[in-house]
Amino acid sequence: MADAYAIQLAQAVQAALDAAELSMPITVIRAYRPRRDLKDLADPLLTVAPHAIEIERESRGGNSHEYQVDVAVQQKLVESTPEEDTDQRIEQADALMRLVEEVADWALPLVLTSPVARCLRVSNEPAFSPQHWDEYGLFTSVLQIVFKCTR
Image 1 (cartoon, rainbow, N blue to C red):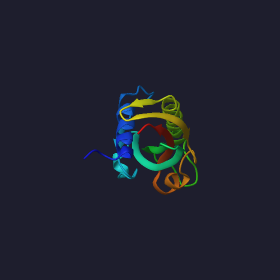
Image 2: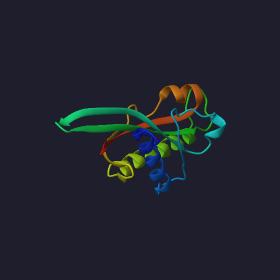
Image 3: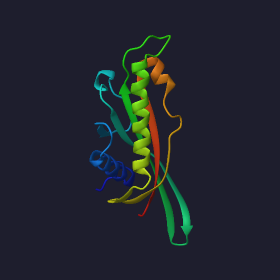
Protein backbone atom coordinates (compact mmCIF):
# COMPACT_ATOMS: atom_id res chain seq x y z
CA MET A 1 0.00 0.00 0.00
CA ALA A 2 1.33 3.44 -0.94
CA ASP A 3 2.02 6.05 1.72
CA ALA A 4 -0.56 8.78 2.29
CA TYR A 5 -0.12 11.71 -0.08
CA ALA A 6 0.79 13.99 2.86
CA ILE A 7 3.62 11.62 3.77
CA GLN A 8 4.85 11.40 0.18
CA LEU A 9 4.90 15.20 0.04
CA ALA A 10 6.80 15.53 3.33
CA GLN A 11 9.33 12.95 2.11
CA ALA A 12 9.79 14.85 -1.15
CA VAL A 13 10.34 18.13 0.71
CA GLN A 14 12.87 16.42 2.98
CA ALA A 15 14.76 15.02 -0.02
CA ALA A 16 14.73 18.39 -1.80
CA LEU A 17 15.98 20.18 1.32
CA ASP A 18 18.72 17.57 1.73
CA ALA A 19 19.91 18.43 -1.79
CA ALA A 20 19.58 22.21 -1.35
CA GLU A 21 22.69 24.36 -1.14
CA LEU A 22 22.14 26.58 1.87
CA SER A 23 24.47 29.00 3.64
CA MET A 24 25.11 26.69 6.60
CA PRO A 25 25.32 22.93 7.05
CA ILE A 26 22.02 21.40 8.16
CA THR A 27 20.52 18.04 9.02
CA VAL A 28 17.03 17.35 7.66
CA ILE A 29 14.68 14.74 9.11
CA ARG A 30 11.02 13.86 8.70
CA ALA A 31 8.95 13.49 11.84
CA TYR A 32 5.51 14.28 13.19
CA ARG A 33 6.79 16.56 15.95
CA PRO A 34 9.92 18.72 16.07
CA ARG A 35 11.00 17.44 19.48
CA ARG A 36 14.56 16.35 20.13
CA ASP A 37 16.87 16.16 23.11
CA LEU A 38 18.72 19.47 23.49
CA LYS A 39 22.09 17.66 23.36
CA ASP A 40 21.18 16.58 19.81
CA LEU A 41 20.62 20.17 18.65
CA ALA A 42 24.16 21.54 18.69
CA ASP A 43 23.92 22.03 14.91
CA PRO A 44 20.90 23.31 12.93
CA LEU A 45 18.19 20.67 12.53
CA LEU A 46 15.31 21.01 10.08
CA THR A 47 12.30 18.82 10.82
CA VAL A 48 9.77 18.30 8.01
CA ALA A 49 6.25 17.35 9.11
CA PRO A 50 2.84 17.10 7.43
CA HIS A 51 0.49 19.62 9.01
CA ALA A 52 -2.80 20.20 7.18
CA ILE A 53 -4.91 19.14 4.21
CA GLU A 54 -7.55 21.31 2.59
CA ILE A 55 -9.80 19.96 -0.17
CA GLU A 56 -12.27 22.10 -2.10
CA ARG A 57 -14.63 21.26 -4.92
CA GLU A 58 -13.16 22.78 -8.05
CA SER A 59 -15.58 21.56 -10.71
CA ARG A 60 -18.09 18.80 -11.24
CA GLY A 61 -15.40 16.22 -11.74
CA GLY A 62 -12.52 17.43 -9.63
CA ASN A 63 -11.27 18.79 -6.38
CA SER A 64 -8.48 21.15 -5.43
CA HIS A 65 -6.02 19.74 -2.87
CA GLU A 66 -3.78 21.93 -0.73
CA TYR A 67 -1.32 20.40 1.70
CA GLN A 68 0.62 22.24 4.38
CA VAL A 69 4.04 20.95 5.30
CA ASP A 70 5.86 22.51 8.25
CA VAL A 71 9.62 22.90 8.39
CA ALA A 72 10.93 23.56 11.89
CA VAL A 73 14.39 25.12 12.15
CA GLN A 74 15.99 24.43 15.54
CA GLN A 75 19.33 24.82 17.25
CA LYS A 76 20.48 25.00 20.87
CA LEU A 77 21.66 28.53 21.62
CA VAL A 78 24.93 29.35 23.34
CA GLU A 79 24.67 29.91 27.08
CA SER A 80 23.45 33.27 28.32
CA THR A 81 22.25 34.88 31.53
CA PRO A 82 18.52 34.93 32.26
CA GLU A 83 18.64 38.72 32.47
CA GLU A 84 20.39 39.45 29.20
CA ASP A 85 21.26 37.67 25.97
CA THR A 86 24.93 37.71 25.04
CA ASP A 87 26.15 39.18 21.76
CA GLN A 88 27.20 35.67 20.74
CA ARG A 89 23.65 34.34 21.30
CA ILE A 90 22.14 37.20 19.32
CA GLU A 91 24.59 36.61 16.44
CA GLN A 92 23.71 32.91 16.46
CA ALA A 93 19.98 33.68 16.36
CA ASP A 94 20.55 36.24 13.57
CA ALA A 95 22.26 33.55 11.47
CA LEU A 96 19.38 31.15 12.15
CA MET A 97 16.81 33.78 11.11
CA ARG A 98 18.79 34.21 7.86
CA LEU A 99 18.56 30.43 7.40
CA VAL A 100 14.78 30.54 7.98
CA GLU A 101 14.42 33.26 5.32
CA GLU A 102 16.71 31.33 2.99
CA VAL A 103 14.57 28.19 3.31
CA ALA A 104 11.43 30.28 2.70
CA ASP A 105 12.96 31.78 -0.46
CA TRP A 106 14.07 28.29 -1.55
CA ALA A 107 10.57 26.84 -1.00
CA LEU A 108 8.46 29.41 -2.82
CA PRO A 109 9.44 28.46 -6.40
CA LEU A 110 9.56 24.76 -5.51
CA VAL A 111 7.84 22.40 -7.94
CA LEU A 112 7.91 18.70 -7.10
CA THR A 113 7.42 15.93 -9.62
CA SER A 114 6.87 12.96 -7.31
CA PRO A 115 4.37 13.64 -5.94
CA VAL A 116 3.26 16.39 -8.30
CA ALA A 117 2.97 19.59 -6.29
CA ARG A 118 3.91 23.26 -6.47
CA CYS A 119 4.41 25.69 -3.65
CA LEU A 120 1.66 28.32 -3.34
CA ARG A 121 2.82 30.25 -0.30
CA VAL A 122 5.15 30.25 2.66
CA SER A 123 4.47 31.83 6.04
CA ASN A 124 6.40 32.08 9.28
CA GLU A 125 4.38 33.24 12.25
CA PRO A 126 5.65 33.70 14.83
CA ALA A 127 9.15 34.24 13.50
CA PHE A 128 10.54 32.25 16.44
CA SER A 129 9.33 30.74 19.70
CA PRO A 130 10.05 33.03 22.68
CA GLN A 131 8.92 30.18 24.96
CA HIS A 132 11.58 27.79 23.61
CA TRP A 133 14.16 30.60 23.83
CA ASP A 134 13.37 31.36 27.49
CA GLU A 135 12.69 27.87 28.80
CA TYR A 136 15.20 25.77 26.89
CA GLY A 137 17.74 28.16 25.35
CA LEU A 138 16.52 26.84 22.00
CA PHE A 139 15.93 28.69 18.74
CA THR A 140 12.78 27.32 17.09
CA SER A 141 11.14 28.76 14.00
CA VAL A 142 8.48 26.98 11.96
CA LEU A 143 7.84 27.66 8.29
CA GLN A 144 4.40 26.76 6.99
CA ILE A 145 4.68 25.75 3.32
CA VAL A 146 1.46 25.25 1.37
CA PHE A 147 1.43 23.14 -1.80
CA LYS A 148 -1.22 22.75 -4.48
CA CYS A 149 -1.22 19.10 -5.46
CA THR A 150 -2.38 17.16 -8.47
CA ARG A 151 -3.91 13.87 -7.46
